[in-house]
Amino acid sequence: MPKKKIELTEAEWTVIKAVWEAEPCAAPAIQEKLFKKTQWTYSTVRTLMDRMVAKGLLAAEKVRNLTLYRSAVTREQAQRGELLYALKHAFNGALTPMVQCLLDTGDLSAGELARLEALIKEKKRTAKK
Image (cartoon, rainbow, N blue to C red; front, side, top):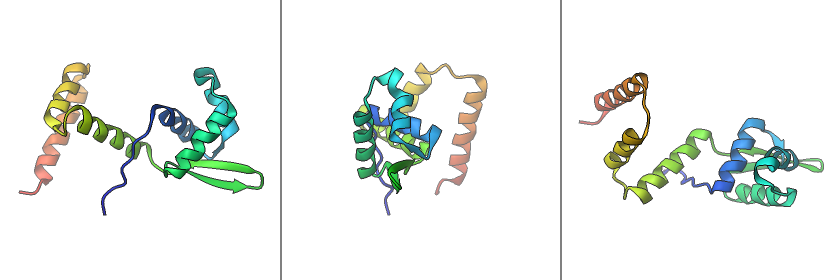
């Protein structure tokens, strides 16, 4: 079965990051947390969160008269979706130019480069011949 395609808008990223930090949480708490940065009203946040439930990004549970939200995707799933979107749209699916771009624009430490080399060596070792 193919993995579920996860693509978040900029607003959804803002909301889900706040949810990851405070789950389970209610929309008023998220609105309060984000207000200084976004100026979003409660109804804006609630609408966004309900749409994210419909998209399968958040799960909602009604507890008496309060709706509690939890993430339905992990940080890693969301990051993977974002990366695959960039790979597909910005690099026409070509991984090497994307990695080259990241290497050219990133200020990588010797430790980070060593970790990348180790990841590539491990992938080579376990790759199907």
